[in-house]
Length: 291
Image (cartoon, rainbow, N blue to C red; front, side, top):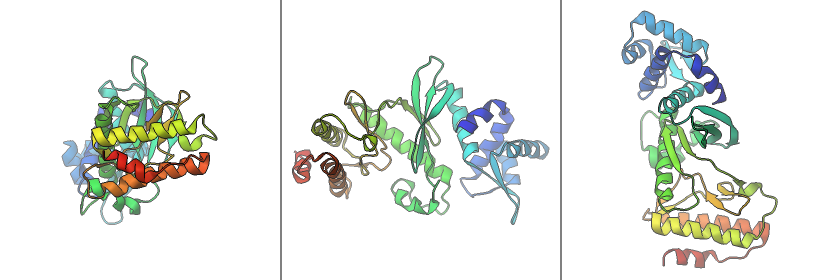
């Protein structure tokens, strides 16, 4: 993303249009043929070839010549399209440093023209192995052609919608600002992941705060996280907790809702018992959720 931010100001609108043309073509195939790019961009062949050469020189696309000449976006090319849209809409104006990196996403700080600081989350599903994509079938569906662009865009959309639902509950959760393609802009996440604390003050109180927030989200938001653990619970200096990473959330009436809720609560309970010797009764906690 930092590389994309450097390259974006050097591109012309015609270059961006070529990238968008390839993006459209990738809905149908991994590599987009030259004639299709020309069609989607609405450029003469000479202009199409010139623009392809420019963006290829900037290493924003990959060229394939095994059977027929075709082009596909790489991650920097897709980052540029998302950044361009967010900048054009005056949502962000500057990209800051990398705040965190996981298997499926990167988080950067960013700023708008009024110097408001936000967090920019970029989905990178498929970075380590695209073979694991089957576990996202719940929101991807059954498609004959599965583009990594499509998967990451749907992931961002799903989490953005989840954040909007949770934010209405007036909990200590990030405020969703905007999303575009595989990128989400949200209020700045202060603190760090629970797993990265060597020790915390009053762990029992923190545990109860987590359970209470889970309960409110379950009962009022009708949502279950589905993948909760110490790596997606943020804690700040004031003892405020923040549950993040809502990609795999399910509604409370989901067929597997109970088992997913049990897993979330057991994960949190086991962590606090092993690290802080905080005893709890997951079965009683779950019963209380349904009261």
